[in-house]
Length: 218
Image 1 (cartoon, rainbow, N blue to C red):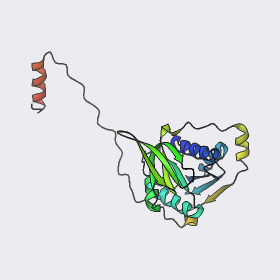
Image 2 (tube, rainbow, N blue to C red):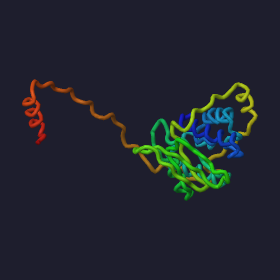
Image 3 (cartoon, rainbow, N blue to C red):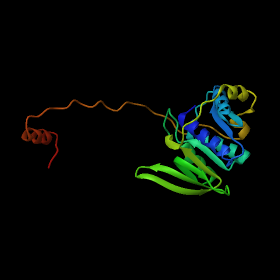
Image 4 (cartoon, rainbow, N blue to C red):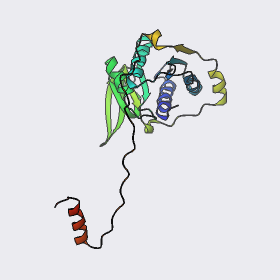
């Protein structure tokens, strides 16, 4: 499981343990192998799982967000928690696109999540370049989890056995009425140019001379 998604799942479990959530649905988009990940989610503490089988089709953030939107409209959750980004392409877009498609408030890069006592809002502390920012969102809302939100638990052997009996539903994009045609083409992937070796100089004058040769003026 993507480490960020694992943290998102752990947060959902903690909210349920604190009686701030009643039911946890784990969702994965991918091939049949995704069911192994969902069984892990069930063993950690999710109540039920849903596999959206796309076969060998490639899905980007837009396609995944559209599929998740269809699930949200079907299941009507109060809170959707995702990992902040994938670990293969680092897109960091799915949560934001999903919130946009649903017209829901969003709290991204969450390092702390607190649901209000009346269960009508959530306070999110999020990590930004300048430090920490605290925002308040009304529910329903979308949250993306950062690394410092929590430390996920391990699935115990008894829970792994129990997970085999928990419901795991399987749907396809066609079942949800979602077109997953790719609209983004990766033209090429290339490494950045290698850095050239440095040059030692004997004095400040030599340094200034070398810089002038490179066209750097003072």
